[in-house]
Image 1 (cartoon, helix red, strand yellow):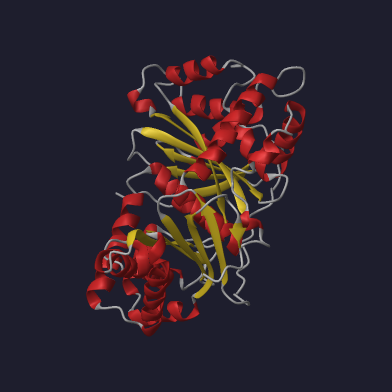
Image 2: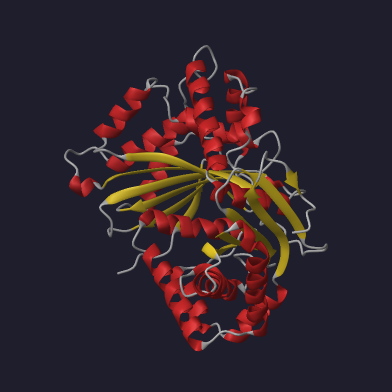
Length: 434
């Protein structure tokens, strides 16, 4: 039997989402804290979780944190930092064995929540500040993470395309922040930033597992002693139509393969009634191995090492990414643009449509096989303000026809063409006639 929907309540200012189910052998717990992407804040916010993982009030040494997780039957613990729309999100997650499979009478859920609550609320301190050697060590960790984006040219090109596309929008900021801002962060300034971040950020706590709503609320109330009251919610990112000529940019670096990326505005977000049609648009265009971009750019013309598209339903954009030989730029652009025009004409045969629907439906069904995937899917509802279920989204996709996809295609507008090519130095020509 599939689980029912999440039960929602407010506990100590936390939006609590509980899904009681005995389908899994573990408890899955996620905490999301979001803050608007903003100059000056994005880098210290990214650094916070790296430092919090190092130690707590009762477990001040990192080795003690690891030992505590071992005591919880090897409980998992980690975090992610990413952006959704114009928000920078930090997600902490932990999972531990269900009480049914643990020895003793101590509640594993209670212990896991107590651990996570302490990590978040009572970090290790030294003289009223975050532990300096933890801060310094994690500053270097964050620096290496940021540098890794630049070293991976596929990721670099994707980020640069967004920077060019959103030059006047906070979405241009990378969720890990900027390397040049790291040095100026001190244990004192980071502690102040952390306390303000914890006090003001929307906080959503998810629990999936063999529990009850009443038990979960009681345990959360005990583990998270935050101030009561309602925190600010999320405001969906405004969708702005394109109102200027297509922006074109070139970066020249020492690379062996050209990276051709395009940014397009769809005007359709996750909460829009047309979102299922936008999913299908992306799938037919470049989401799968049977898609137009893959078959026409990579397979038929052998112009690209890879060619695909991806949809961002929180920002209302679609991106195209491809890896090409430097000399194939003009031809690759021409063929990609031809696929966009084909979509606008509704040139989608029944096989393309059915294959895409099947792929999307399969991906959605797989969500219900993972507690954390179910949590992630539901959190999209919180961010967008639109309640969806896996079943309802599959049904909407199945009911969508070619006319609806063509209607989406007709409003998709090319905004940015970005090309990473070879050459000396790393200068950018944002007005190059590429």
